[in-house]
Image (cartoon, rainbow, N blue to C red; front, side):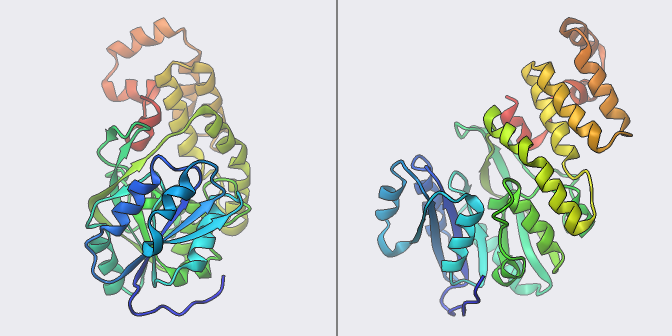
Length: 321
């Protein structure tokens, strides 16, 4: 990715990739344009081959935004193209179906200004479902490290892309988002970025994160899991990074009543970590008749029953309810 001089009038470039996001992209753009941050921002939208009314909606903003138009290329290519067209020192990611509070940049950018060794700052958000209904008041678990080590990031730290602001120089050093990675491109980027410096956390809810996973999207996610694991192992020598995601998906399907799908997800987790006792319990639980498991769950402590029947906590609840 080519180096670009940062004009003093632009401190932050808001990067919005979109494909067929006519129903939500205006809301995302508006929340970026109405930030109360006074350091100077620009909004760069990468239209990734949309076939709906997205292009028409983007044209209404005129020169208030920069639009990069691509043939359908994927979210990684869209983000990379937008960053190439950007001029800011900092990159603030915003997905086309997410939103920020008006003070998001005011609360996050000063952390990067004041702490030169911090390469990325992230914050909390509410999780919303496909209708926009809040289904979790947080997406970053209370137990998650606030200034994670590289090992903790490799252990599948929860950092939604729209909750991050990072130094553009670091994005470029990482080579941007990998366009050959079919999923979790953002998390792989964060893994690489952590090699260059600290991550800092702002303990505030500064946006809403829409988390929707259909069965077709989940299957594509699963199909790509091996590629993600292989790339992580080749670069970092770590295996089993998807374990917690498979457990969460299993609990989602248990909550939906689909024991066969739940069993498949728990089996995938077992293959990654065959010596995890809880996984054996969950696999056995999926084999019980539903009536028996309901009866047993009714007399168990709530925490134990939830660990077997789901749904999982946090943003995963959005696809379980």
